[in-house]
Length: 285
Length: 199
Image (cartoon, rainbow over all chains, first blue to last red; front, side, top):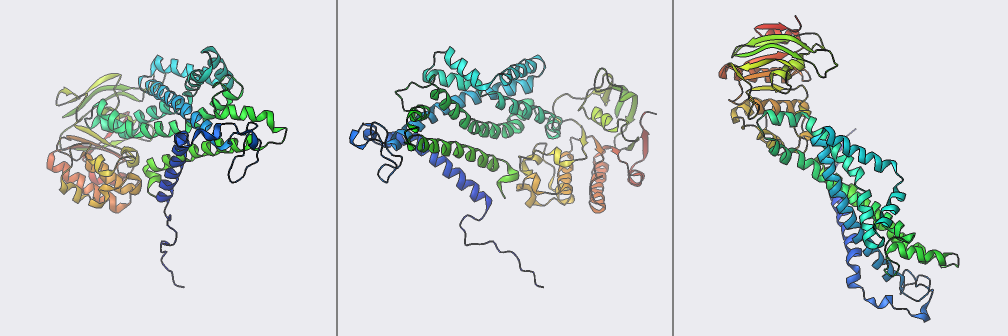
């Protein structure tokens, strides 16, 4: 028997995993960026009611169909998703900053600071998520601002726990202790040992927060205490479509729903691939 | 002279003493074995000596001065597991530069190839990593070296190579060695005397 060496196939352009990962990141990033900036490139013409073209099912000229006022559902969905993404981006960023700050403080200061922060996290975890969201959104007066504050204040807990655990683990790690005995200052250690571990966690944590933020934003808007009804947010569009689903106009709910699903999945995929890329163990396979 | 006077240590207020009234002295250039059954505090004592832990009572003095709390510690401890001693997100080169960089002769003597330096720790074997972890502390600033099961996980060839380099370095710079090992053959070969813990 003759053993033949395995030759890397040159037929497929994306043969190694690193290229796969980079490709996935680029694809997801472009898609999400495209959705986010789409309102500036699409004309508003699609939003004007054309009563002659009411309730058209999906076709080539109207891929998402039209609604009961003859508005182009694709333009509306993209507008809505773009708004939702921007709201989600802001809320998730604020949330990630709170989570990182409190998590790192709990992990590095320890003692009663740690106990207090853990207690707050436990309180947040013990309350039903959606109820808390509704309460906060309601308390600060609802609207777009209410949604952003509510989502930002309720989504930091899991990231804070991850960050705290990471800091605790790093401070106990042999290589950090050795670094101290090799004469490195705490500041140097924080900069060179902790940062390279915490930054990817923050970045991936932030991206994986997005889907939650967007879905909860959509949920709040759906039940009517989120973004005001005249703005085409994805939750508003879905809520409106509910009234028309029973009359057979399925595309009003299904198409924007699919777009939302796609966007959330894209964020998830982006986060997973970014994590793989940032960890040297998986980045060069 | 590295002296430890009446050391007492336990990991918590309610926990039993791990180190009880331990006194020892090690001269420069001396090679001492630390012998005790498992779980009697060999590693704890070596962590105390290298300043990783602080004793509840007693003191450790190097040339009649307390150990420096910052800056390069003249007493360096080498751990059993090198993969925990090197940051997994750093390239090897960066880890070597963490301490004053060892001389090229040391790197060559330990068989560290230049090609390794641009790699990540998970791309090297345990033996290769241990050689890097050892090279890192073989600098003139090191006065005492504590080897806690330094070569327990390595094959005989690598063990011999590592010990040859470490012993040569110790002799040349008058570095005192504390060796912890369960291999009596190894201790008999290397050490001049033994300290039994808890006795």
